[in-house]
Amino acid sequence: MTRLLLVGATGLVGGHVLDQALADPRVSAVVAPTRRALAPRPGLINPVVDFDRLPQDADWWAVDAVVCTLGTTARKAGSPDAFYRVDHDHPLEVAYLAHRHGARAYALNSALGADAASRVFYLRTKGEIERDLQAVGYASLTLVRPGLIGGARAESRPLERLAVMASGCVQPLLPRRWRVVPAERIARCLLEAAVSASPGVRVLPSEAL
Image 1 (cartoon, helix red, strand yellow):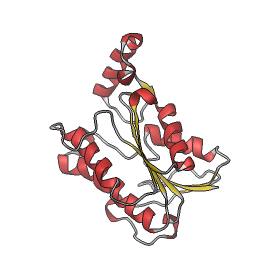
Image 2 (cartoon, one colour):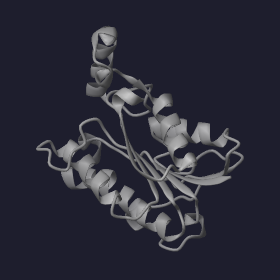
Image 3 (tube, rainbow, N blue to C red):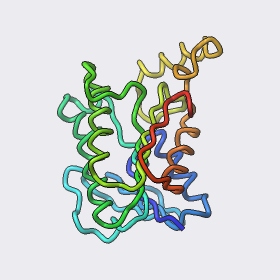
Image 4 (cartoon, rainbow, N blue to C red):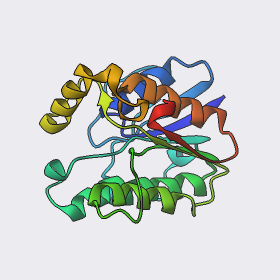
């Protein structure tokens, strides 16, 4: 049985991971720290935290595996520094704390084109978190790189929504890596990677999802 830590449970992909994990007989409990309390559910442990001041020695860090779906947009974050904290610093700190308490597997929802050498800030940030996670010491690390993500978000992302709509019109003509990937499918890949904990570093490109 796997005790799973999920960060990003209130987002589109994270919400699907939460639903799937709570229904999965291989998962004994889901620890989902959030800024605001979630509705109580059987099997859910929901610490309310400030991600800028995470508790270092809370009992709930003791998990077997981590799924991270934390992410924001530059507009919502308000500045490049704030964006970097959410998409790089918070996932990395979670990785260190969970690993220190015994976690052996980590699955990250990254992005198509992630590259630490990219000139594009978003892709460089994603590439840097992928690179830095590999130095933490997880026995199993999975980096999932979806392109456009399909699904209804609670927050407004008009440019992303427009891109998904445009992509949907020509979906059959696009190479697989540029097609819209349903959020539920990404969530399944992340959950399976965390629970199965295959040894080594694996990268799942968009066309493999």
